[in-house]
Image 1 (cartoon, rainbow, N blue to C red):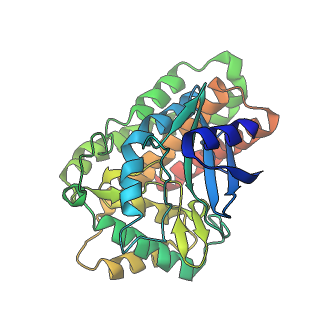
Image 2 (cartoon, rainbow, N blue to C red):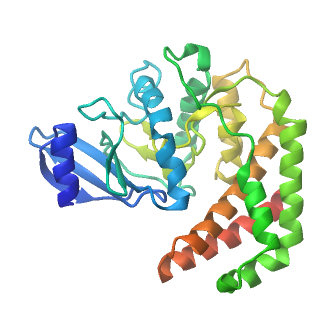
Length: 317
């Protein structure tokens, strides 16, 4: 925490009065709540850019953070999304060895988590997404290179390769994955088919959060949508797929349709994003387990997530 305090002072001009560790999400190495001498509170996220599964998030910071900063001032979304704090140089990240720091205004509130989202919170989330999806590339008042989503789906090839050449060193995964190898290959093939047959004749690209579930919202005075690492230009269904795991999934889609009544949800696209996201999650968890040397507790958590992801792919198919 001493390094964080020194960096905030030198790079952001924030002199910390107190600093506390907080939960920062799966992609972060650490996170802090920092109070300055004026009583303003900040949320500081720290990434380890040397980790394979974190590198993607770090590389996108300069792409999505200026857009998020602009969004946070819009009348429809102000107070409902995070507000980034740039460094004194204007940069949205600061590096210190392998660590990368980003800073936001701190939001006071509770995270409901995925299964405890209420119907009222679900309706409010749908309204936030509807406002977000009303914004396309033409509405953004500056250039946004590399903001469009990547439809090459590299995780499909990576998981397919893993299924063909599993490393015996990680045979703890074998009894979990091997019985479902053919099913996962079928899921990958369907995902690629849907991408080519459906994804390329879709609705317009709009701003999407990419991960709008109950672990990424904060119940403050209003519901606030957090964790914007996946912000990108994509079809609206790239957000709406989350209904499949939401405790009030039908309510989410109904409230969204009411808030954005001129838009017609493409259910084939929903299937594409639902299936591709689960395949991506399975691959990322395998990659973290096999390439990042997690401790015993984290390994058990990853194995459970992989198992759950496989079950959910079976349900989708």
